[in-house]
Length: 146
Image 1 (spheres, rainbow, N blue to C red):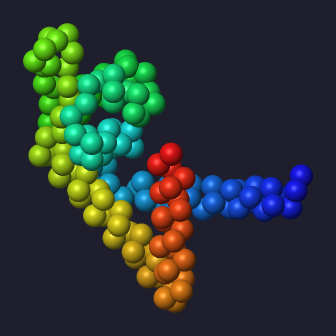
Image 2: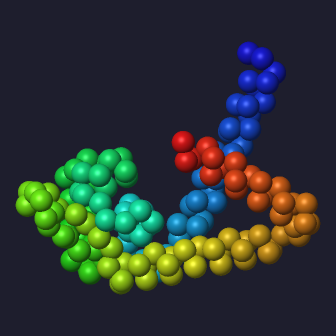
């Protein structure tokens, strides 16, 4: 194995460990305690990308259609999403986030951003450190948006 590959593997391991721990801490901050991470992810996808069919949502979130149907049923029962029949094909249903669902996503984002800002504020970061974190965030977005 080349030295460059060993460096890449070591960096991947360190990033995985750090990102996993950070994500676990941030997941604790949410607007609705009883909402699962999967349900919140569906609401966030609807907020960001708009109306979807159940099958498109299932594909986006990488779950089965029955799993997505169950998730949407729970979100609809709580008033976070609505089902809208397709105008051209009555067998197809679209799912759209409600204002109440939008509020949950916005408040969860606000809480998570505040938690992370507090965590960063607890350590002594220089301007250079903040610039490195900003660059790392951009790189991580590139990795995850592929």
